[in-house]
Length: 301
Image (cartoon, rainbow, N blue to C red; front, side, top):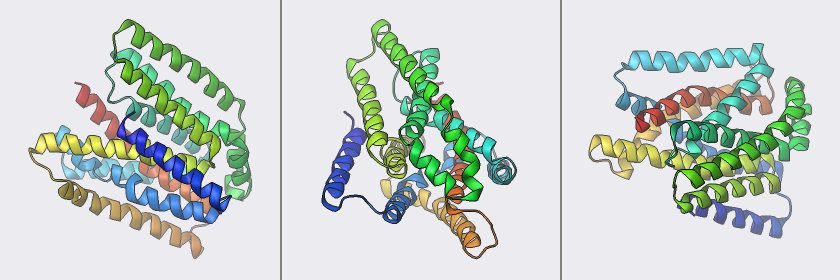
């Protein structure tokens, strides 16, 4: 068990204690707690995309930010024209990104590693939806502008993806460890983390389950990888200096989301809070996925 899995497990036990003492956690408190965790750790893990990418590639600030902001603006506009397709795209991108991150530190052969990471990502996204279909359908039906998403959450394809990706994932993992002499500890770490993810998504609400995974098994891991990478390439990098790197664009992202939300509250932007949360996370995710794909591929090379 690595330290991220340990922290993840400890936090699950703490939540069980909260549930035991207080019973159900009010949905408003869930939003506040999860939102604070995402602000503290989720948004920062993508706040130095420009530094990471420019360290690996010779590109000007103008070219980088033109590409980065263009993707954000284009995707934001697309949400208001093709919301259903944008959600499907968001789920697919998230699956790819989560799977890639989950297996970034394991030494697999190139093709099996890519396939395994893809199936792992599909498991993460499909299991989150599969275990929480009723809740997601209920949330979607609460708002007029998200009712179109119910057909996606209720789709039989979610169940097919969940079971088929689980079987293929296990077969690939076993094949890799049986025939390519990988460490048994790595196998146990992978399987233990996947079990934790399943248990979390099954036991907790979709908001809490996603936040737990996103923070403790994804964002913190990526922050560690980014810190180690920059420390290696800059010669010296203290943790306090790394935190200072995270602050500017974390602040800008929060400011952007705040302005967007204020626009909803005062009626300038006519969308629901639920749709706002989905759009807000997705438009930040899109360019980040491209940057991290380059990051992991460059590290392998």
